[in-house]
Image 1 (cartoon, helix red, strand yellow):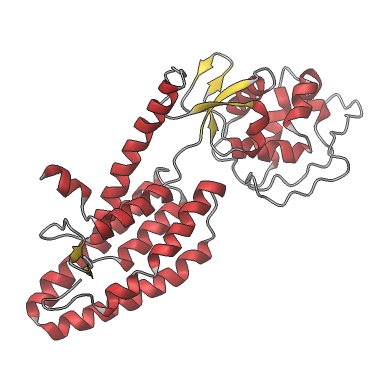
Image 2 (cartoon, one colour; image 1 turned 90 degrees about the vertical axis):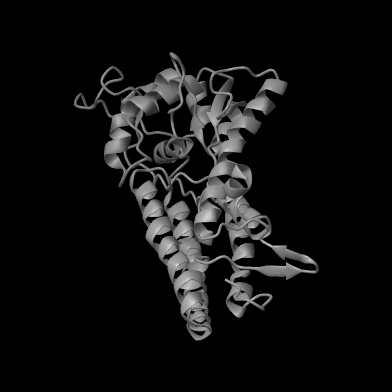
Amino acid sequence: MTLAGTVATGPDLLRLLVVPVFAWTAVRDLATRRISSSVWIPLSLLGTAALVWDGWIAWNAGQYAWSYEFLLPTAISLGLVVPIAYLFWWIGGFGGADAKALLVLAVCFPTFPEYTLGSWTVPLETPPLGAFSFTILTNAVLVGVVLPLALAVRNAVAGRIAPVMVIGWPISWERIPDTHGSLLETPTGRTRRGLDLDALRMYLRWRGLSLADLREHPDRYRDPATLPAEPNPPTDGAVSADVSVRGDGRTLESDGDDTLPTAADDPWGAAAFLDDIDGSAYGTTPETLRDGLEVLVTEETVWISPGTPFLVPVFAGLVIALGYGDLLLGTLL
């Protein structure tokens, strides 16, 4: 918020410290899909300090500034953006880091900042009344809508025409262990909700095997009798996880216990894996895991969806909001 006759208030200048941190989280989210919760704590404190500072300036500027330039947009930011972030996290639309990022933005940017750069004053487009954090969110959604279109064009130019061309692309099976996203194929055809590749890494680490091992001896490892007697920690499936595998990483053969499930009962030991791990493998079911494994042990190239790390469009939405303003407002006008 900038009161009449000022160029940029102290709170607005303080808020600029958020930008490089969000740039780092966007890069980190794109590379690892993992953001430490500790990142959001100092940003929350910074946002709270700027909010209190803003409130003190508005209070001393008079009733209009307090009510309309501070209190109302702050109420919209905290009363609208915060519930939206929580709701989308609760229904699974956002990851935990995405929701926390929006909560931080609601605290850090409740009012519209204003900065003068030479003869330019930014943002250029500002609604007559609104919360800056909501503008960041709508900008991020618009950026997120454009990304599938760009992906479709990229696939079309490369001659990769398929129903899933707006959400993914084909890669070699050898890249799967180091790739984030989800499989878009099953033994019966393409799907939009295939095996999560983090869950695949959890399964392979639990068994102490590589994907190359499964491809070399699929008939053997399809039999749950070859599950390890002492499974390894599955980790969280991150590519960069610190993996410690017992022994040489090979499975241990069963001693002939007839009570063990057979390949017909539990192919690949998928159900046994999900029953054994502490927690969920990103909502993966035994059927989804089995279908993904059947594809990955036979196909040389598979379609995957990298997903869109939401912190990337959120950072883009923040930068656009600071420079241009409200994309939706500019489009409507």
